[in-house]
Length: 253
Image (cartoon, rainbow, N blue to C red; front, side, top):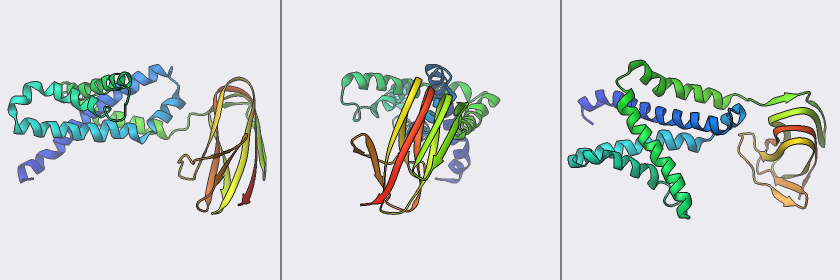
């Protein structure tokens, strides 16, 4: 890259961030309506790294490649919109084996790509608006992704070495039960809920927040620790009311 391009590159990248931020913002606003303004679900959505990679890595790389194609073949500039549509939908061609799923996902990808392109064209000349979408909105979304919006009412819990119990009038979000395991130890646990309303679920995760695979053993679940650390049984509530009971045993097999 020569000296001229080196000076221009930060603004060039900033333009791409405008497009990505605008496209991502429209998508998140749409999803916020779809989940009925549920802040916990929104936070979970924004915590998905693949979503950020799609809008900020894949989209920006495709836009840079399209610019390179236009530079090599200037006659294609009149078809730049088609290039963006192609880039937006082609990524779903391999994962989506069924044509219906591809058409749905591809349409969403194409719409996101068009928002990216027209976001750059329309918003770039507007100074404050460009700052909002290039910098402000991503920061807001990052803040939302790290805030815990779990809501509990009259939550009462008891815990001992091999069990946990809680009662609640309202539970929406998640609650983590920390358990220390040494390498090679196996935890076998069972989660029961006596619910009066709402939905529930659970999963197991490591101290980094990664979901850990569980082995089914009848009505119970099992997990073997591959390293020393703090692990979590994570309880989920969807506007639930009732009582949780969790029992576990730890051994070496």
